[in-house]
Image 1 (tube, rainbow, N blue to C red):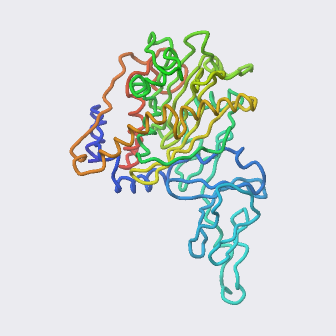
Image 2 (cartoon, one colour):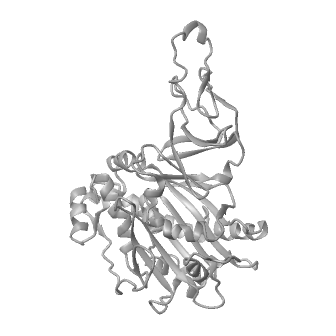
Image 3 (cartoon, one colour):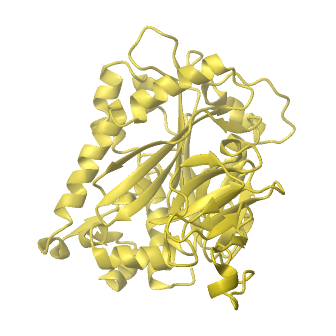
Length: 433
């Protein structure tokens, strides 16, 4: 099944077996070959600003304590006592000098070192305390974003590769983004890949799935749902690569279609840009992206929650955390430029949650469909069925574009979603590129 899928992509047929959406063996392969080897977003530095601050985050189903130690270094430890495996930290956030296992009382400092064992002098005389500290994984940062990896093959910078060219526009040229909230979390019964693929710039579904979002005035039909003159209002960016030449992500950008919809992602940003990408930031009103495997972002200027309050951007970063082949934990951080006032940030939060919260207008549209896909992929007959990503762009790559990737002056195609699946195939089957 998987090799046929790879051959289909090689032959540009782009057929995907429906069964890969909901199969426990596939899920186990993903944990082993994707989530144990990739760089996974864990949170923002601002969430643990002080020495001893910690947060519990996950890579797949594996829990990790992400903590700023007394030496100010950020580390991540497997949330499991080295004695008998008990979970040692049961709070999602906190501040700690040490952690003590509730089972047999082994204790560890906030740098992971084993510092206390009850009855050690009597019954653990030969215990090597240095050997039995908490298991630490690799942690690196991009700007103020913290990533972790259980067994990385490259550095985070090498992993992000060409995607940094566009991430910099959002997380550097804006003056940096800060989280407005601790992540909003809810669990729903669809496969994680559907959400990650969708945020890989699936423009085709918006005019159908989210028609009511425009009908009810939550978003301008011109700014997000109209097929305006191709080549002047939007670009899709597919096949961004890491330093090993493997595809890593895809972006979509929309530009200000009128004076009523602001650039700078809809935020008030006053800065002098020496970087040529600053000219892009000045014009951009919307973006959506996915960085493989499960980090996505979405910003849309001039949005509303249906109230009479001011419009403001929908602005978020999210992780699709797999809990099984048919269950996903969605974690959503509302984000805003660091110099945004608390008043504006609060309004951004209100609008973002109204679109992408558990009862958000767009969220309900999406999850109801994604649950249905996952449900029909569960059984035996789904093995007989293949789906397709054959929609081809009807315009050639854009000439004169300075950035990396395959850049087209339109978004009504499925080239960006194919970027996600190409990397998935590479990792699951062990292909080099």
